[in-house]
Length: 356
Image (cartoon, rainbow, N blue to C red; front, top):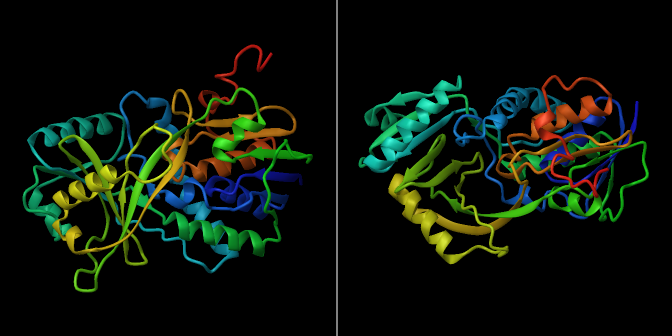
């Protein structure tokens, strides 16, 4: 078994460390404040179907594979902690607010189906039977039964507890150089670029809101609701703790704080889909920076005998956590990860000078 240092305590780093320690490796985790970065602000949807974006076909097998690996990862975590992960399997409803949105939703559903994904078209009556709080003035609905969710903050706390119970050493400090260990995994999001040349990472900010559902409305929703409102995307995520998350914007303006306009837009569009939002308690608005790459594919692979890169997961960091953990375990043990990772090669954007 190897001695491995995992740099980065977001969900990817935490899950990777748990998977490695559970397999018998001697693991050290380095992060000054685990779970405080993008993980703290994430939605947590395990949505390989609903998260599909046109012309990103290289991502689809990664997303589907990671969703399939999640139950196994959760079983490993449950062996080492009694803390909840917020895992829910009720599925996702995707809604259209008007006729143009309904046309968009129909085209997207056809694209998803053409790529072998399970999408069920619903009448609005059937959708409101599943979720009575939905507005009666909608133009279309589909059900995606296979899209699930975790609560990222709960899941991170459970992973940290599991690491402590597994005896993992947690060094609460920044890595300023590649640690001197038998094997090293760089999973520190945007910070990985400072430690290894050739990684082209950019911060993509996303605003997300958290509401409290009052007792007389609870549960306002029982499954994730996503929607298109005048071609703007919005999602609503009911949590096991009785809160509701609403997100999320995507902007590259170097402003790491919530924007008033974004808060307004998210609340307006969410209320268009679920009018009861207006009666909920406003708890917080936060902004996280997701690590994006030039082609929006992650950097995942071995660089040399010592170093493995696992970063750049952009919008799909929570979903791809299970794949990242399982693939990294295979790479550490020098096994085939069971999935072609050539599209995720860490040096694919490096210049000749950076990577001879």
